[in-house]
Every structure is written in C-alpha cells, then in structure tokens.
Length: 385
Image 1 (cartoon, rainbow, N blue to C red):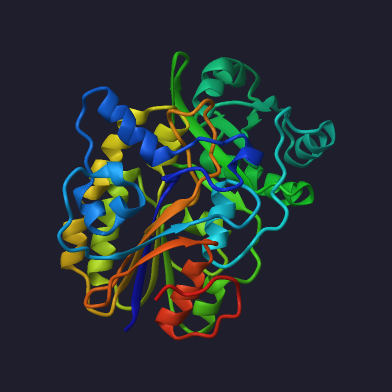
Image 2: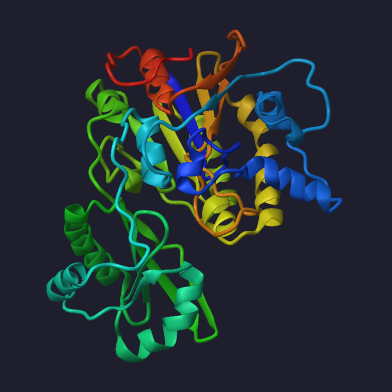
C-alpha cells in the first residue's frame, strides 16, 4: 500500500535558471520578487509552513522566523529540457527530456494551418495572434457572437487556443473543434491545444471552468511504468490533459486552487495506494499571466496554511513532493512564463532530512518515484531518496 503525492504549484519558480538569458528571462524570480513586493509595500507575506518544509533554505525571504527543526528535505531543481511551458515542465518531472522545444508562433499561425483547420472543422476563425486570453475575448467577443466564428490565438508558449461563447458553441462542439486542431497541431509541433469557453455579455465576458487541454502524446515515462506495474496514477486538475491521458487513470477536475486543495485533502485522506498527481493552476493562470503579485502572494499563503492538515493524514511510509513546472514572475516585464529553477520539498515522515542543493533536472522526481515504488526505471535523473 505504497503512496506518493506530487503537488505542482504551477509557475512558482524560485529564480532564473542558468540559461535564462537565452529566453529573455535573466533576473526573473517569481517567489523572491513576490516576497520583495510585499515588503516594499509594507504588507505581510510569510510562508511558515513551507519554510518548515525547507523552502526558506531555497528562498530565505519567504519567512523571517527561525526554523528549529525542519520537517522535509529540500532541493533546487534546474530545468534540463528546452522550453519553459507547462507540458515541458511536467514531462520532465516524469522523465522526458526535450532536446528540441515545442514550436511557438509570436506572429500567429500560418495560412496553411488555418486553412486546414477551417476545412476540417467547417468554421472560419478570427483573431490569430499572440494575446492574453481575457483581453482577446473582450476585444473580439462581440465580433465572435455576430459572425459565429471561433477565436484562435496563442501566447509566448507553444499553445493553440480556441475561445468560444458557450451560448453559440455548446461545449461538446468546442471540444470537437479542439480535437481536430490537436491532430493538425501534431504536424507543427505545438505543445498544447486549449479549449477556452466563455460566457457573459459584451463588456462582461468571463471564461468558464470547462477549459480543456489537449497535449501531444508524451514518450513513455514513469507514469506508464507505474501503471504497467499495476500501481494506479490519479490526476487532480489538468494533469491528465498535460499527458493526453497517457499513464493517468482516474482524473478529477477542480475549480481553482481553493477547491483543488480541498479535493487533494479529501482524496489523500482515503487514498489506498499509488500516485496522486496534483496541479494547482491559479498561481499561473490567474495571477502570473496577469501580473497580480499581491493576489499571487495571497494564494501562496492560502496553500501554506493547508500543510498542517496534510501532515496529519500522512502515513509513515508516504512520499510527498511539492514542486513547480516553470516560473511566471508577476513583477517581470511581460505576461509570459519565465525560465526559472523550481523548488522540490520532499516530505517523508520518520525519514532523515537533507538539503540537496542544486540538482540538474526535474527528472529526479521520476527517479525518486521509481525508487519509492520499487519499479525499474532507466530514464534520466537520480533519486534523491
């Protein structure tokens, strides 16, 4: 009855990676800059529980007190794959290293791609540029309603996003369009296709919770190995979408961080065996991409307050890893992901505690899961257990 829990705090980077300058991200520091912004504005920001798990050893300004005894081991993980998007980060955690980054489209998608998409879906599309999702529905939402034309857009990441009003495009129809787009996108090495449904009236459009991500099929990884050994893998949040269903069995949708924390607590309390893999996306989607450092910090403190209750429902042989997939510094120029190192906080009740320093791949998580569950794994990364 071996159990493991991975919680990905989506975009909570802890400082620029060694090669950040190549990505235009030199000087980015999601967590450090949020803490500094609070201090500069004479606001309280403190993460005492995460500090007790070793986060203050990686980023000292998250807690001004002194930890007498740490509860967990810690490490700084340096990204090895090329890229700085959600898919790249999560795949690397699972043991997949990308030598070539996914394609990006800063000037919009090619006429060839759009023609194929229109022909196979039966719709003409509007938009076709890099844009913020909330901004583009305000800009083109009325035209979308008038023309009944889906809105297509991208960002600095490798994504093809399609937004549609739920009163015009029932959710199943939007998903159908995105499934077709996913097949076409494989030819262009696009990491994710994202369905972005929205509702409301002009001037008050709001995205709904029925977002759905369609990723490329990942290469074989630790999740497949666990399943092959009859070890169940359950996803919470967008985990199953990120891996396009490969290696993930049961999946639970959540409506934001608060709900995700509640669901994680409830599931883990009764979890029998296997891996519970969680993504909390609000840090990235609601705050990082919108440069909302204050709200980002509040969400971090909300998560911090959850840890004591999580500790009470852990068993002595459990493994819990809290980490992130990339950075998204809300104080940094732009609204896109940053190439940052990420934290790894490794909680094992009754096990020796160690600060591991810098480790040169997110894939140490895959190797650690393999050792924890006792399965054969020949991929990248070295277990920190």
